[in-house]
Length: 172
Image 1 (tube, rainbow, N blue to C red):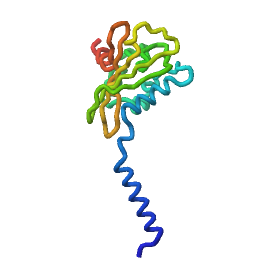
Image 2: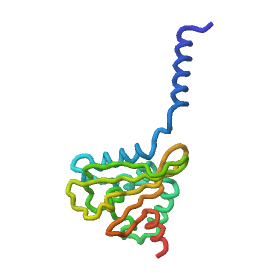
Image 3: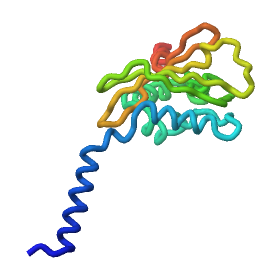
Image 4: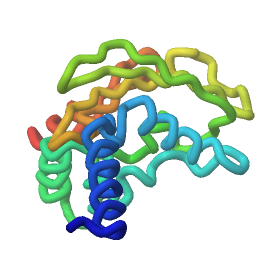
């Protein structure tokens, strides 16, 4: 005999499993970048986005396993006391972060990889080249979570890629 409590528990379990089955991937590249840049733009916009690479835990939260492994190899290859190849905030493409506003645009979206661009402006308006205010992110899906697999930008007409910088550091 089914009691009211059993029926209620069964209905609750079925409703919860239905919601979980229908729930989309809990993170998507647009949401991830929006959260990163909202944090970078908060306050005076000078906090930057280096928080995504500041620790092993932060890297594990935001970066792909292969990018983390490459970064670890690069760090191990860097002479003690030296700064590694990424000596700036890649989220803001600067040493002196300044984010007032931003717009995230999806350039390519596939089942397991995506490329998005973030165009941002600063409070100071001291950037000469608009290309320096566009950062591209390559994402990969790992275990149903989107992770950043590369960050790309340009400074003084020179393109850069975090993945390429890390790989190049291993050649010397």
